[in-house]
Amino acid sequence: MTTNETTAAPARLDYARTVPKVFRAMIALDAAAREGLDPALVELVQLRTSQLNGCAYCLDMHARDARKAGESDERIYLLPVWHDAPAGVYSERERAALALAEEITAIGGGVSDAVYARAAAHFEDEELAHLISVCFTINTWNRINVTTHKTPGTP
Image (cartoon, rainbow, N blue to C red; front, side, top):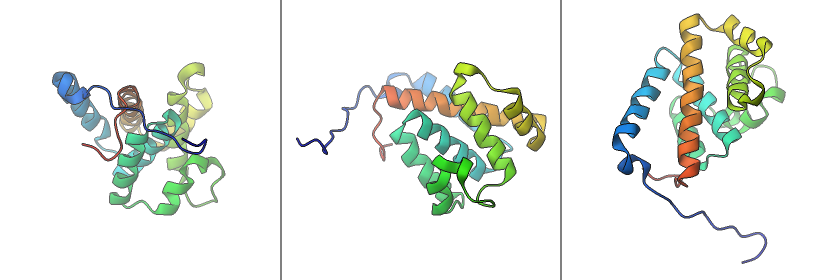
């Protein structure tokens, strides 16, 4: 193997098959978290969180789902650098959601008052609670899939 070649990590246990009750509970939690939120916004948040967590499986799945929800390639490609994206690419509401998702994902320092206030200014309490829920469910999915080496494109 040359220095430019890499090998995929071997798959580990099949989480859904091994703990179906927990898996079904995660599916239900994920569905409940999304209620009332714009599907395209949910996909942007899930994509950005998956980028931060290095979850190839979720990146693949949510990029596909984002396109189905109407997201453009430009917005998907610029997501890692959304802070520096040209004005108008992401709305202030989306920027607030992405900032919150990033701080929830990098929880070490907590969520700053400024980022929380920014999100609260763009989302009603119930929407904000759902957005926070989407952030913690995608972080959990990322951890499951990274731990088990879930292969992108597989069911």
